[in-house]
Image (cartoon, rainbow, N blue to C red; front, top):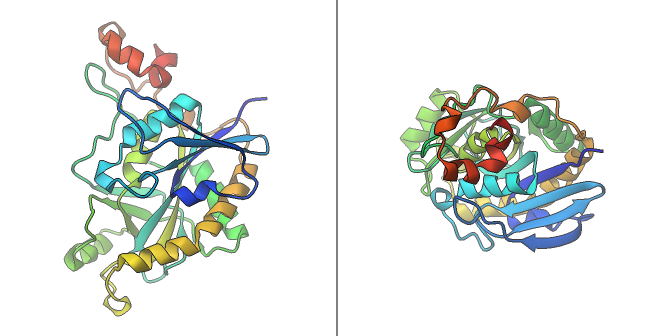
Amino acid sequence: MERRMIGVIGGSGLYQMAGLEAVRRVEVKTPFGMPSDKLVRGRIGAVEMVFLPRHGIGHRWLPTEVNFRANIFAMKKLGVERIISVSAVGSLRAEIAPGHLVIPDQFIDRTTQRPSTFFGKGIVAHVSLADPFCKTLAAILADSAASEGAQVHRSGTYLCMEGPQFSTRAESHMYRSWGAHVIGMTNLQEAKLAREAEICFGTLALATDYDCWNEHAGDVEIENVLAVLAQNVELAQKTIRRAVAALGEARACGCASALKDAIITDKSRIPKKVRADLRPIIGKYL
């Protein structure tokens, strides 16, 4: 039987879930430096789980400082085939109230300072990001959250901003005019890198507040964001457990072959060090 290994990226509270067995912390070295923290490995039934606190234990890294490449590479190196990202977001729509869950299906990129690819230094690849989330994983996450009683929005555009400051009111109104539904600071790089690594990627986006466009709701206050997020850790845990049970062994989506025909560099000209460093990602194509 094919092994299932599922990664979860989010707050440190996510891996303190009931039913998680054989828990241990592991350090994973990557060509891109160290991940945000040690990865936590465990098991739920027959499924192996790998958890990573995105901002490190104690929330030490700014969104811009998160080593996204090391995080996703470490997951790939351990054998993860699917990643569930759990993230706090601000709502840009009246119908997405604080406490609601959104399963995004699109992105708008407003980041400017972050490496977002494993490639370069002598190797060029262009993967498709037309549909940046795995549709199969997204559907299972939406069904699982609804089954746990969550108010779920099954699609939406996630605008990823640089941060760490929240939006100005003018920016918030502009993002609404672009058709964005929620705003956050982290998921875009994870999705891009997961696609390059041929890992399925889906997001549980928890609306913790209305972004500052909604003057009737008051401006964004970090203590309120954290309070709503803390209240919904258990919901996220239950959703993840249910989704893990629903995922099949073999993947039928296109995520597993996203790099096929994407590497356009002459193989004989790829530097040996780059070839060795990226072996977990490109090895099967070379």
